[in-house]
Length: 88
Image (cartoon, rainbow, N blue to C red):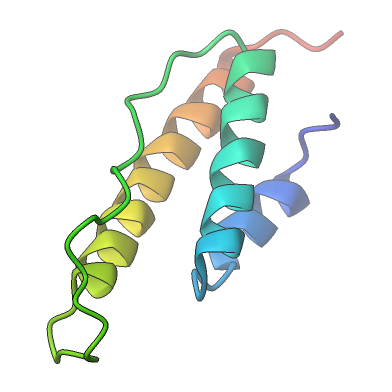
């Protein structure tokens, strides 16, 4: 996988609007981190207590906030490792 600033920006700007999008983003970021030899903290666990009634403070909202925070931390680590890595 080619790691470019454009790819990282695309991941950063991606709207976490569904579990599929979130899972794909996690997989991509973790693949990039593995390519750079990084070990990231675990992403937030999936909610297991949603009642499905559309509550104002749904556990899914909290999950997406936590996932966004994980993404920010992970991309910061990826960028730092990529900048410190010698060019091939």
